[in-house]
Length: 303
Image (cartoon, rainbow, N blue to C red; front, top):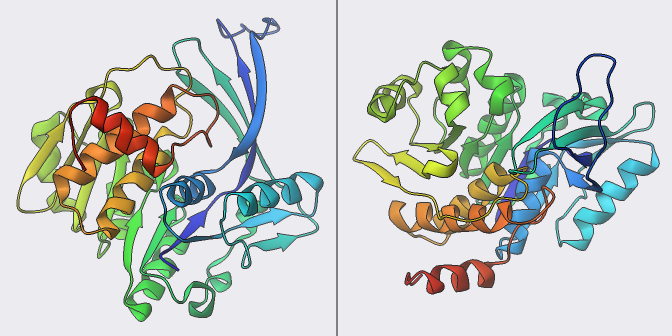
C-alpha cells in the first residue's frame, strides 16, 4: 500500500444557483447533482485514479448514506477496511452552492466524521504505507497521524483547511511541525498572516515544515522547500465547479512526489490535475494519470 488518507467522508448535494437568496427569500436552482465528498476521501479517490494504492481512514454513520459513500470508494479501488462505523450517528453531509463561474459556498454537517478519535488511529491500521496524508483541522488527529508515520518510517502531508487556519498560527505551527508537506490555499495562508508571495519564505520558516505548498486559484501555486521558492501559473480553463480542486491538487503533488519527481514536475502535474477537475462537476471528478499526461502533452510539456 502506498498511501493512507485520514479525514472526512461526506455525501455532497450540489445546487447550482445564479445568486444567493436573501433572508426569507428563495431562488431557483439551475441544476442539482450529488456525489461523494470530504477532503480525505476526495484525496483518496484522486490518488487512486492517478495509480496510487490508497486506503482511507475515517468514520461514517449507520445510515444508507454511509454505506453508499463506502461503496463509491470501493468502486474506485480505495481500501475502506478500517473505516469506523458509528450506528448511532448520521453520516456527514455537505450542501454545496455552486455559482455559474465555478465558485462555491458550503454548508457542512460533520456527523459521524467527528466520531473519529486519536484512539482509532493505530499503527496496524496504517501499515504498510509509504505516506500518510492527513486532511483535517483537528490537531489531535494530525498529531497522532504524525506519530504513527514516524513509527512506520512513512512521510506525511497535512491539509488542515480553513478549520485549522482559523485556529491561528500557533496551532498551525503545531500541526505542521515535522511534516514533510503542508498544503494551504491562499485564503488559509492569509489567515496565518501571509501577505503576498514575498511572505511565503517567512511563513515557511514559522511552520518548520519540509515543503510548504500554497495554491493560488487562477494564479497557480507556489512551493518552498527551504532551498528555493518556485511559482507556476495555473492553466487557463473554463471553470465549472471548483469543489475538491485542492484535494485533487494535493493528490497530484503527492503522487508525483512518491514517483520521485522534483518540485517543478510535482507542481506542474498538480496544477494540470486541478485544472482538469474544475472543468467538471462534483468533488470526485478528478482525472486519471493518463488524462493528466495527455493534457500536459497538449500544452507541450513532457512528463
